[in-house]
Length: 333
Image (cartoon, rainbow, N blue to C red; front, side):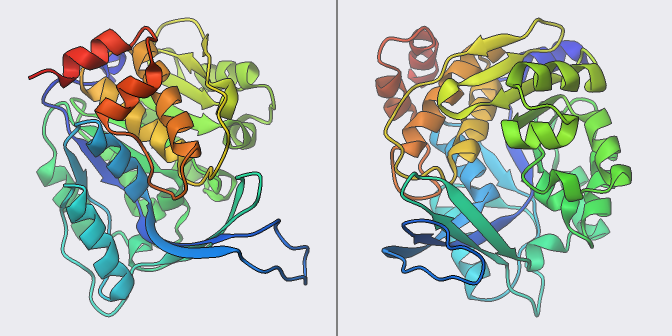
């Protein structure tokens, strides 16, 4: 991979191309997750488009053009996903699969803001070689391609996605979020993707599954040792911020922000989408990580899975932090 481009992250003509899963979330607020065999009464229940949509929405709200290149179906859930993508200004690349709806996820959000998921797979899990060919044909130089571990864990589409990643041209940047199912991804599927990645962003639980370590700094060091110096690493640590290892540089702790947690569902996606958008707009990785930390904290303080800030909201939320001048520069005509 081109380490100079990897360090830059993107250019003014970059787009986010997400080859992942945009699905529908059934979000239930509960006092606590019930014990096995138990039950609980939800205090609030809502439907919302989630999954990779959260990353796309977060990036679009910060001004990065975005393309949804994942599979989608035919039915009420698929219709909702497409309508929400259109509302955020996200283009859809491939036509819907017939005779199967897009899948959904039940998200239980407890009183501490933590979330627990159960997912029913649908059309988004059925990536085909025709889809892969469409993605390859649509890519432009300097695009940022986002891959989720969810897609790699799918029994029917994971191998197709890994093969696609291995064939991506070298003038696009590849970003992987391993996701909570990373331990279920076969090595023959995961390893080629890790080999091609320019950036890996994970939370501490996902990092522990990848490395067998618990400490964020140790996780980052182990990932760099595994991936090589040309691959950037972000280990998200919630309110503590993140560990950033830009390509060829030393690890840096980027402090987070303490906020009252309302709903952590989608906070990691808001961080990822903001990081991609800010890198794609030309910011250096450290400034992008600072902005992403703020975007994640902003999202945690609001209910719903797709609550990333607009550029104006992010600048206001940063309130004098170092990246503000650069963000204002990006916002100006």
